[in-house]
Image (tube, rainbow, N blue to C red):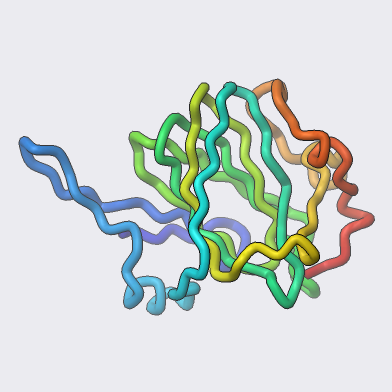
Length: 180
């Protein structure tokens, strides 16, 4: 695995190092020792799959508050997505700033998201599927969100939004979100 720091401290793009032959390829997507060497979470509590049918679908921006704040490792298993994180960490000099990584099934790249970040994505293809590893279990009473098109954050989504949940339409702007 190759770890490339993103502009927001503690977040990484991780590229798989595929080994291949005439049968196909093999790649590690997690190694406790390598994650430990970068100071990243090395224990996963929950694993989820997200499938979005239509190109342009937007999911996010979601997060978990303490005591259930969680780090995430996200990989695209089918299609492609524009994956976005927003720094919500209390006292962070980058509070409210965002960074993105395009994740594709073909490329195999992943994003590591530390605790204290909102996360969301927009599908760039039909039938996009993401695999998520979480450092803590989902907790409805600790869930939170940030409005995806808040001008104060200024995320530049690559496509018009064609599908958005009612919950995500009504998430608050950054000015109404307490730091994590």
